[in-house]
Length: 171
Image (cartoon, rainbow, N blue to C red):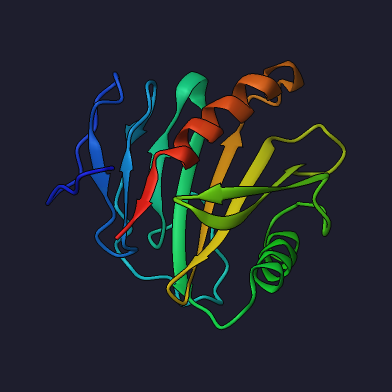
């Protein structure tokens, strides 16, 4: 069980506890992960979102990767939430409308979906992974990007993001 902390901390060894002030989750930072900026503004559930925007919690991962998190209230099912999220990513970024991969996972015991794609879909862009879940009427999106565009890093990237997602706990 993850204990909560009143403020975000980080360390290269992954020993810190990050507490999202706006989005109601904690994260035990895995080895190689550092906390970046806390979201300063709540996401409205509609506006386009980028990994460096003021409405996302930001993280720096191993080997130059990065991750982010944001959430908003939703009445969608998980499937509807994933479809809406992927459609928004295709609308707002050079991502395909349909992810290359979709896998059922769990986040803190909640059903979740993991999607993967290259943006743009030609494979020449960065690998983007998104993990979607719904907890207590709030839809969460946890994203990951490897800007290196090195397809040989994909197994390590998937493992790094799995460590990240597996360390998330909801309040």
